[in-house]
Image (tube, rainbow, N blue to C red; front, side, top):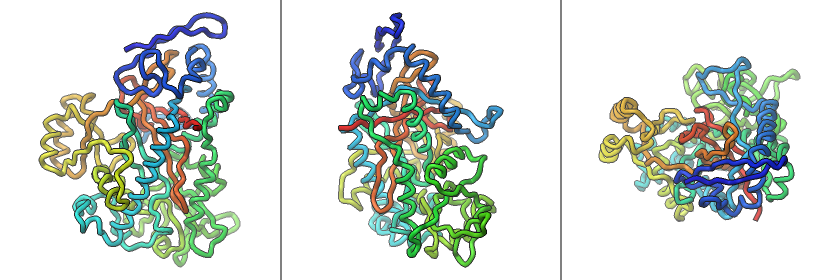
Length: 490
C-alpha cells in the first residue's frame, strides 16, 4: 500500500514523496492519505521534503555539537572514538488516551515487580505458593544470594525503570520487556527534545507537547529520598565505569544536569562501613550512589570478579544502611526474560488486579514441549538469551539463515534455561527522513519511571528506531536510532 502526497515548498515547486504502508500499524497514517487525529494539525509541517531537509541538517549538527553519541562494544570507531546516535525529525506522538494507559500500566508493573523482589529476597511466599517456580528464580544469573534479608531503603529495589512497549498490528500497546538493572537511554530522550525545540520551536506550542525537561531534577529528588537517616543534605554521586563505557555520554550528561559529582570506583573509599569520595579538600561522605555499573563489578570483595570498577567494602556499607544504591543490587532477577513470562501472574498475586497491558506470548525453553515446538519452527520465532540486553544473544527467525537457526537450535538444547522464544511481531512504523525520502521504519517506545517517595512517570520517552529498512532491531548498540517522543496535552 502506497501513500502519495503532493506538496508545495516555499519556492512554489512541487515535491512528491511516496509513503508506503506495509501492513504494520503506522503511528502517523491509519490508511492511505489519512493521518491519525494527533498528526493532522502538523501534517503540513512534515509534508515538504525541502522544508525538512534544512532543519534535519541542523538536527544532525546540533546533536554533533552536543556530543550525543553511543558506541557499540567491539565496534570500529571514527577517529574521535564516537559515532552519532542517528535521529529523525519526524516524531511519533502518542495520543493522550494511549499515553494514560501506558502510564497506568507502567505504574502497575513497577509496583508489582518491586513487591516481587522484596518477597524473593525475604520470605519467598510467591515461590511457596507455586506462582513462580523456584527453579526459575534461583537459577537466574542475576539472582544475588548476598541480598537475602538485606533491608533496602523504603523497601524500593527499582528506582529507575525503562519498560519497552510496542504496538502490535492491531494498534494495541503490549510490553516487550522490562529494564530494571541499569536502564539507559534517557539522555538521548532529553537531548533529542532540546535539539528539536531549537529546530521547530513554534511546533511545540502549536501542538501542546508536554515538557520532559524536569526529569533530571525529578531523578535527583528521587535519589535524595534514599539517603540514610540523619542526612538532611545528602551527597549524591553517579558511579560510572569510565570513559570507555558505551553509555559514558549519558553518565556525564546526567551528572551535569543534576549538579552532582561523576565518580569512578577509584574515587571512592570505604572506612568503617561509610563511603567517602576523594576530593581536593579531603574525603567527603557519600550518601547515595546512582550506579551505572553492573552488580558483578560493584565490590570485588563480595562478588570476586577482581574488577577495579567498583570499590572494596561498598556492599558492606550498603548492607549496614550507610549508603543508598539506585538501583538496588539483585534487581536483574525481575527483568530476566524467563521471569517476564510470569509477570501477569505476579501482578495478580500481589495487587489482585488484571494487567492493564499484556505481555508478548513467551515460551520457556526449559519446558520440553515448548522447546521442541520452537526448535521445529525457529523461522517463525524471535529467540532471546534471558540475561542479555542491547539486542545481543538474539535470533530473529524470519530474517535468519539456516546455519544461524542450526546454531541457535544447538544452543537451546545445550542450555534451555538460558533462552525464551516469542512470536515475531511486526512492530509499528513511524515516518523517518532517509536519504531525502520519508519512509516508514519500525519503532518501539521506552517510557521512564522513577520510584521513590512516589512513582513519577515522564510524559515522553525514548522512541527507538530500526534504521535499516525492514529491520526489527531497534537497539542503539545494534545501529538503531531514536526519535523525540511527544505526549500531547488533553
